[in-house]
Amino acid sequence: MTPRIFACLILITAVLAGVGLHFKNPAARNPSKQKPWIRLEPGLEFGAFIPPNKSPVGDNLIRILKIDPGRFQFRLLNASASAGGKRLSAKQWTLKNGMVAAINASMYQADKLTSVSLMKTFGHVNNSWFSKDRALLVFDPKKKSLPQAQILDRDCQSVDQLRKLYHTLIQSIRMISCDGKNVWEQQDKKWSTAAIGMNRTGDILFIHVRSPFSTHDLIDNLLKLPIQLKRAMYVEGGSEAQMYIRSGKNELEFVGSYSTGANETDANSLAWPIPNVVGITRLPSSKR
Image (cartoon, rainbow, N blue to C red):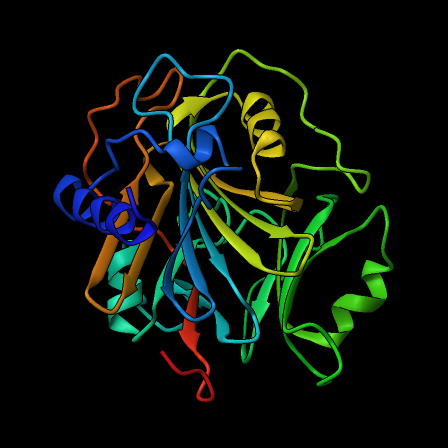
């Protein structure tokens, strides 16, 4: 099967399935024979990977959108940024703001608006509290010489200084240590997951996994995939974990479902309203 035909099958299946892809990715099983990434447009690639260790629920696919920060501008959108601001699904946030893709920005508090840790951007502070969480997604640099977007780690970088050099800051729970180790203890609870990562070449990864895993097991799986993962942070779990992509004629929407003790089913097809998302728009210099 040629890469072009394989890509078409992925995208057609995604549109028809709505909440997930139902196929087995041969490239993920044997990446040496076929590249696992499907190019949606310059600087934007989509991959669907079968992890080495399986969940007993769902299709088991780990879906990743790989984004080149040199071609896409990252945006933080908050329902709290305007009076009476409404929570929206990732798809609604994307379409309303003319973006290409969006994913959960972070977990949030009981008011259903405020992030659990530091979250701020141009002209708006959602949460000013710089917590003990070790990971910090930053973008909108104040100097052109800085990376356009990156995930900082408090254990191996001077985050207190570096965070002053960016306009947009999103703090969350670290998944991988500075030396590439799994930092989550094993637990019995499992859920669907949304995460944001960074690979060794500086690409930002939007990660969505509908099948339930403990976070420890999911991290182990991510580290074994051919994605050159360097850093990652957890942004949401359960039914609210979602990712939406709209690139040309291709539209992909993925929503979570399972959460131990709350919603132990793979039946959810609803994209729940969420208060905060990270989205991307094309930079003016980018050509499709």
